[in-house]
Length: 307
Image (cartoon, rainbow, N blue to C red; front, side, top):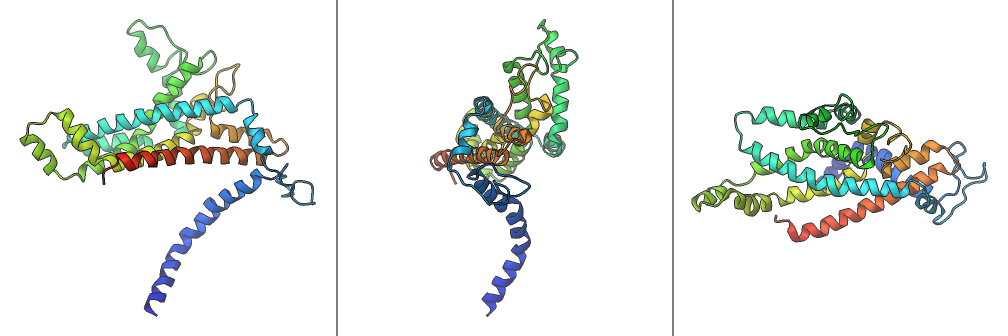
């Protein structure tokens, strides 16, 4: 009797969270899978052929995604962001965290400074970085000019893909540091100090302490950060809009910096027949792509993570 009452209380406590998850997570997910296999879905009549019901297809909508002229560019941009920004941001955040952990006097202030990007609107930060990388009056070109480097067109008309992607990657790495530093700092502060005391007694070099003590003991946090960072990088969109605007690229190549999420939005904005189904199919492709990377990370983590 007591156990059944406790179960009832538990379900009552979980009900609000389950309701929100059902409405805003599970229903959209199942609805996306449904729309991906529907032909020429009409959002007004909620059918495909007037009021005659739905017409189902197998892989036609997925074929339209793969045949999209921007599909290859979206895959390329998303892959570059994932494979470059994620390792760079993790390594940078780990180094900064170790340095911050050794500073006691201004640690709280510096933590707040590094955490500010996490609570700032990504569109606003993107616009700020677009100003910093401006070809005429940007701070980056001003700094390079001190060393005799000619101004580089990072963003806007005339910008090359390489220059724009470099600016985007710098912004992506910087914007992703805040949460990683917070997690790594909490992990560093939970490490038993006796390991470091033993290393001091043995006069172990700092580099060896970092590679043989700090990194192995932080491996669960590193694995968690790696998985979540890959998922976040795969969903990159707002940062790109903030830097390059709605055109997502320089003049003459409007979708030069389109990502997979941008491909989904682009399908919806076109408003063509079956746009919802094509966008849902693209979302599922992105889901499978991210799921594959997550499984690979988890497989690697089993061999590398020390609990």
